[in-house]
Image 1 (cartoon, rainbow, N blue to C red):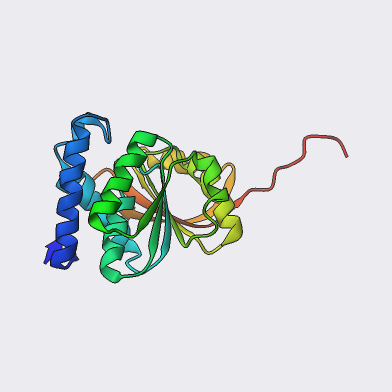
Image 2 (tube, helix red, strand yellow):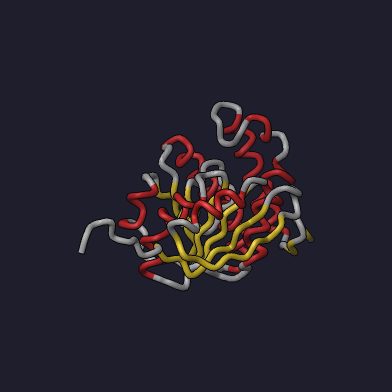
Length: 212
């Protein structure tokens, strides 16, 4: 059967249904996502998150930054469970949201671990990864800053960041500080949104302002 264009087993569909049930239950008492989008789980959150996995549908070690309500990190972890390999490290500093994420992993059997810490502290807990994802977290310049410790350990890392209609301004700003290659993937869910696939990340050399 297909979910958001991806062929999945009955077990994966059941995991996604468990996630949706838990999401709706916990959303009644805490803000897992923007209140205006709570009722559009299937398209606004599930299908939108599956797009990330479609770009790299293989067993990989992922880090999902600012996992919040579980998008896209929990979705990736559920899809990896069908493959029986790969892992997602979900980084979330809000302990209530981290508790929600742990409950989802427990009940779905998804392949992931929750790290209830600040993103800046996560590199001390998570050694290396193959890919990094983030959705509705920060401007691109800051996302590249967050990713840098892992990029320095593995220069082949691929990063996937959901961005809205103003993404080009963020890209232009980030190029002032960073060198990187970028592929823009148009969202199949939201016409004005994109997923930026960014690789070969490196800080630009800073020119000295002092006299020789």
